[in-house]
Length: 551
Image (cartoon, rainbow, N blue to C red; front, side, top):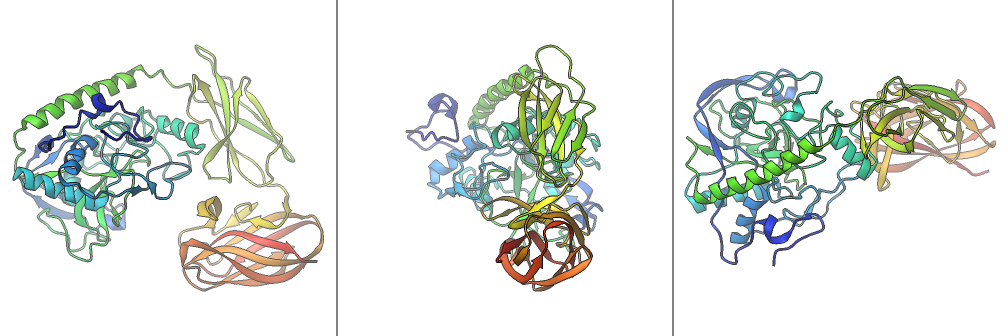
């Protein structure tokens, strides 16, 4: 009996293609021949892609699609492969921590014709070795050089079709972070691509997460989804740059191989240029898959491959019809304005016109530069008053909505910092002005939170200014919630131009390990004051400073 899970809403036999009690032959990939070539590999844009070097590739062939769930199913059934049963695949503000999930039971996968995920590099390589053994053809994972040349199709631009500086063309070629994905994130998780991992492109690819392979335009070689759908595991061990990289295009397998190269990108991120590199440990997630390569010219299609191709074509047609039938998204809201009076913020904007009824949604972030969250919905008029506005600096944006589809975001408007009531803690990101540091999200105390950081942590001479309203005079015991990669000099705390104390920072074990550390006891008077944090060192991050009143 075929297992149907809560993550794959498929009709059993019809969509899963039927499962025979008898082992079935492998579905060999649909391949295309990549002619021999000499090309310049790498880019001057990043240290990891240097030096640019000449690679002499022999003729090889590559799968035009990522390996699908349907293909991988043959492998698991034939070998009883012990696939991972925990995967990082569910979405909230970020990919949730590892939870129960596998190659045939995960959040993004809704069709047998989507890329197989939740397998890790070992699962991808095991499949390649199995199909090579079963067919007698030396199928394998592509090398990094083969992948880059094949992906770019001979181009020297960011993507095979050009640079796309306005981000308006890529959705025809890739499943990436876009307006459709933004709609999905906001409806399902109340979070945003805006101000996250590069943001989103200004187009619509019609998918919120993984797409059926081959539903977008191919590149010059006839390869699909090379830019983005899922990351693709390659044969190479990851090295931090191209020093001593093979010149013949073969996979680089020297070193410890603790990390393997992945290329391309996934539906959950804004796609990077095709020269971009990354290295994963044997990470098992819902956004990583693979495709196959083979030395020499593409082999003839087997009967099983032809049947698969026919079935896939039908699924692709259904997906493209769904895309074509999607109504246009509402227009972008224009001319958003903000009027602020203490804790009351009034927003106004130009009404969106056009056929049908439009309503509006208002979004606000935790801090300036943070991701936007919904705070008001179903507004009929182009005005909104926020009587619960916080006194720190953050932003608003507004969208128009029609039939649950929201258009792109308006311009942002930013509040002025007010007086923050000083209770038991002061959130680090609630500064009125800062130099040498920036606010950022982090996962601490088992929740999404925010703090301040920077490149290499907070800057050595960073200064953060706060406008605090101390409700009651007294003696306070200080503490600070920090993450640090080493012991450091810490920071000074100043009030109205006078130094209160110095707090050292102790190594917490890394930038992702947060600990609360004790500070001095200080005396504070009631009223409004200017509080200042002056950093004395780098390599640390700050979540909050605690003020526990003891007398």
